[in-house]
Length: 408
Length: 226
Image (cartoon, rainbow over all chains, first blue to last red; front, side, top):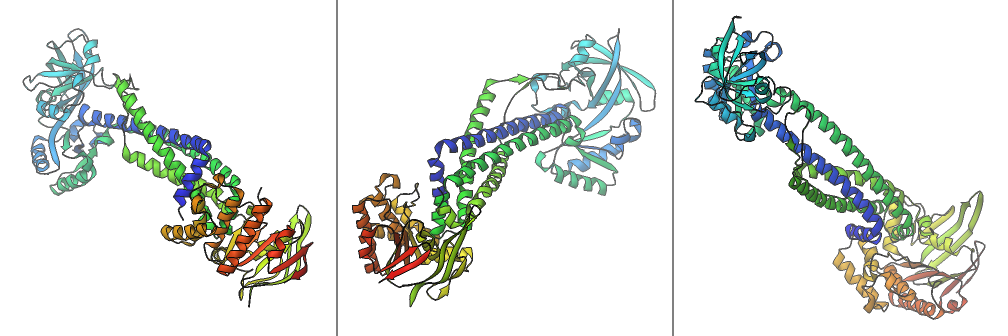
């Protein structure tokens, strides 16, 4: 039997009804695609912000227990200079690793000579910090200068608060690892927007050597690893973890996602909204298909009786109507894909921007075209349509032939 | 040997709270190659009888045999296969599938059976030529006259080479001249192909063309004329 031909002709025969149903599917499918394309772009942006903007890299290695207890007693969880040398040589021998660098966290007070305020900061090797940042948001500025060993980068709100301009000096005060107070002059090398409203008024990026001198240590509290292929994160984590354990290090490895609470929170929120929208679309599609197919079954009762009289069995009748439901979703999804392409292209070209929550500057509203998600959405819609069509189709198949033939 | 045999068949159905006796104690044998008319007034049970013989309905009591096989207790799937392989149907309102053209309508029984499209098309075209519709093969039902539609239905009934064709009031929706043409065509196919035809009618002008006449009244056979 040529079910698809028969199904397609019956869809065309009831053109207006089919159009309304296909459009319901199309708009639903487009809504799913556009929202998933938008959050795909947001996730990618947040991932880049975490990996490159916040310089978390792909993996961060700490002494065991540092993430949980390191904030209270950071000195206990520092890697010593000797340990760092061994760690670095082990990591650099791993072919998955593109870059290894050190981080040393610091907090204290920063002053312009008249007023002071708290800061949190990180010491990094300037050359590595530049590599880790890559091309991410170069418009924000804020790179360490390898030629200026006492110049740090000051978050723009903090610099504004202290009225510090690039080229001017301030003073940073912190406790050394042995608990004594230490103060050092700091040149404002550059100011930059961290992109995060929570840190833009208190963050300092400092050269590692400067930070080590401030804290009076040759160690670091974190080793940051950038991989050649970020998609191989979990495999690389397992392999690196095993290699470090074999080398006698008691360390813990964390992915950028585990360390970026903001990313996880946003992702959880958007995933929930996506599930909500998807559920509504599925219900609309389900009801549309059931309604259309039920009307079709009622109108074609005598035809069903004829086909049964000619020898079609119940399974074949059921298949006939199921195929029609599936074809409606195919038509709707095809139209929806075109709508998605047009709307996404239009929105991306329009250059809309907005300021997201907890963010210190505006971002472009961009919608990605994600074929994988579209394919998954289509498969789900097709399954829903099949189930929806099966309900009236089974009703059609179970009709008594003689009753169906006598239907007026 | 008879092609169709009904023994002690009753058919009852409920109409609201009323039990309607559509057929009572029907005993009937129809031989191979017969051209049989069932004649009776409206409500006499003609359609009910044809529905039972065509295996689209089940008797309340009694048995139905097709050849030497009892068929009234078969499963729904087995009945569908029997109808497809052994029985052709011609309906009063033609019952053509509106979205298919004449050729595609005639192909249906073969395609339901699983015949490849090419072979089904060849067979359908042959039957349509036989019934005089060579020029109308690609027309949809709504582009054809009543007589042409019924010819398509006849071609469809015969395309699967059934042993029996059931026609329920095949001329009721046709003018008198076309009615005679349709009955003559059925008669010719009966003679040429050796297919048994059973048709119901209340048009007395058609009765002189049949081999056998079964008279029905109030659900009972009141007479049989050879």
